[in-house]
Image (cartoon, rainbow, N blue to C red; front, side, top):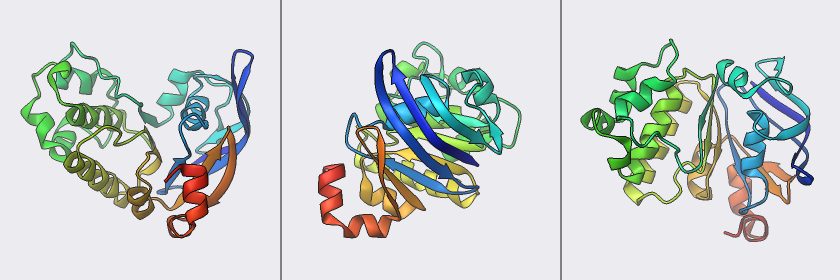
Length: 227
């Protein structure tokens, strides 16, 4: 579904990624892990064409490294950005339909997935709690009818019950066969969801493996993830 080979990225004259390679297969969940500032968000920005980058990026077999961000999104990549970035003055419904595209996901299906959004359909997004805004950001991404869903800090700053709901939803999406690339600090929750971890340190891939192996390696957890 998604393949990166030897991808490097920079912000102006400052390099941020170095020869990053990873893949997300059809129906797989891959966790991108690492301490703060190690290149996780930059990797996502490189995939989406939001930062200067080099190397090979393929999505569904097509090279996208030279494509513009809006064309990459139209090929079927949905983003739930760090900090949610909902449109604060638009209602929940308006946020959801702003970037919607035809497909299996529609408003009724999103409201069934997140009933609280249905209850707040006509409220401005700025009046929602942080957890509700994250639900809105996920629903908005799903309404683009993506083949790959990318979440940057999926549950950051959310209450425990809301985090549990988000993880449950991601599990349902995985069961439906949606490919997912996810960043989050909750390694235990990720380990129960992800097929594979890719750990970044200082902009480089330093470890790839399954969640069980990661949780069993105390040195790796502490040294590279700070857990």
